[in-house]
Length: 279
Image 1 (cartoon, helix red, strand yellow):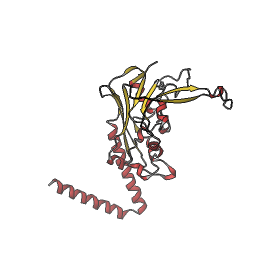
Image 2 (tube, one colour):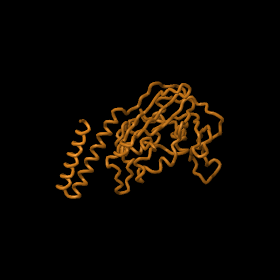
Image 3 (tube, helix red, strand yellow):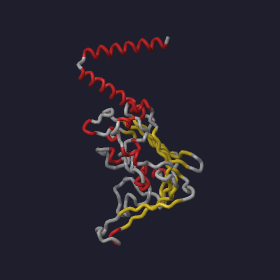
Image 4 (cartoon, helix red, strand yellow):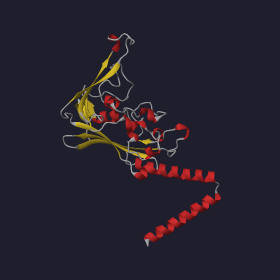
């Protein structure tokens, strides 16, 4: 009986859509269908937002270093909806951040501040970073300990301007991991969500000694234009403006006009709320 009722409802819906299509011109019909798709997608995104947020179960003081369970690669960052297959590629577009070595650098001391000592605005993210990071290099699969330093190249090469500084990444092979706490990102989108240009993301901080997840951020975003590439737009880049939690939530001067501009360093911002870096 239930199956028959659903079948009748489907037939009625199809008949109504066919009638509407015959009453409208081709352009109006396309616009109506696109509007319906946008409304469905937005409603689904709002429903997902009910379970999104930052869930910090425990904080840890004086953490010297972290282990990156996975590293965001350039391949994951290159296409932000430029190709049709990107709609369903589980590359965690919500978690978009610096790629490759840049992703590793974001976790290291002074990579953001470059040794700056003057105070930042009140409530500004600390961006302090850790003394070391451990991770497997995606290129060779080997485990390394990464450290960073700020250097003034003009002191040895006069072709550089005096006072110019740069951050240098150093890496040393290590036989095994020593950091207790790990950071892992994951795309949690379903096929149905991606059909509506919704991307879901999980970012976890894990106690690798006990395998306990001590903090997790669940986020969702949606492209309101449902994958339109008109004018060269990149759907996942524009989807950042419809995100929960919003990417500018850590900044005192909200709102930020283009949310994709503050996606970088977002991983560190959340991790530092849980793992407080050693002074």
